[in-house]
Amino acid sequence: MVLTRLRLICFLIFVTGTTLSCYSQTPYPNETTFRITPVRPVDELREEALKAEPPHEKGSFRRPDLVELVKLDPTIKLEIRYATTNNFLSTAVYSQARAFLQRPAAEALVRVNQALKREGYGLLIYDGYRPWYVTKMFWDAVPGDPEKKKNFVADPAAGSIHNRGCAVDLTLYDLRTGKAIKMPSGYDEMTERAYANYAGGTMKQRTRRQTLRAAMKTEGFTVEPTESWHFNYKNAKEYPIMDVRFEDLSPR
Image 1 (spheres, rainbow, N blue to C red):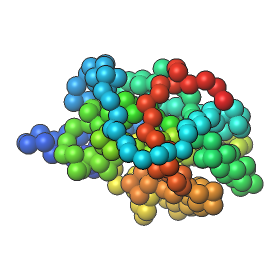
Image 2: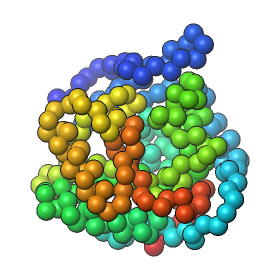
Image 3: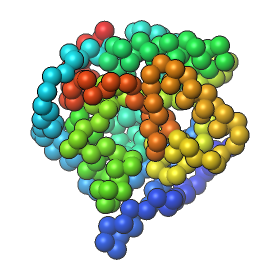
Image 4: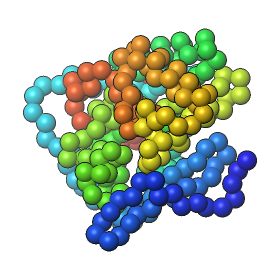
C-alpha cells in the first residue's frame, strides 16, 4: 500500500559540526526512494563538474569498448533512475535513459540474464557506465565527513568502477508480472539495510538477494559490500576512467 506521507529516516547521520543531515524517504509505487538535500543546487554542481578534469592515471589500459546493454539483449529491462527525478538528488543528471558496460562485462551480464530466466527472473538495470563528472556531482552534493560518505558515494579523486564501465546497479524483475521484486533495501538507500550482508528483511527478500548474487558471481561480478545492488566486473582496473557523456556515445 502506497504511503501518503513523507517520513524522515535518520539511520545514517552525517555529522558536519553541529549539523545533522537526515535522509527523506518518499513513497513510489514499487519501492521507497531515499533522498538528500544537496549541499548546493544541482545545476551549480553540474556546471562545476563539467569544467573539472578527471584524475590523471599512469600506465597502459585496454581500449574502451562500451556497448549498450539492450542492444545485446532486449529482454534486459531499464529503469535508469538518474535520467529521472526518482533518485536521491530528486533531479535528472542524465539526459538519456541508457545503460552501457565494457563489452566483456556486458556479454557476461547477458549470460546472467539468460540463466536467471530459468528461475523466473530477469535483470532490471538502474545504472551502468557513469561519466566521471556525475561521480563528482554526487560527491559534492552529499553532506558530511568524507570518510563516512565514502561508504555510499565514490570519491572523484580516485574515480569509480562505474567510470570505467565495469560496474552495474541492478535488481531482479518477475518475468510473469514484469515488476521489480522486493529486496531488503531500496535502490540508493543510504542505511545499513543496503549492506550486502544485512540480516534483516524477510527470508524471501534475502533469498532473492542471494539468487542474484550467486548468478552474478558465476559470471565474474562481485557485490559491493555496502550496496547490495552494485556489482563490479573482474579486471575493471584494466580500463581507464572515462568522462564521455551519453550524448556522445554511439549505439553499439
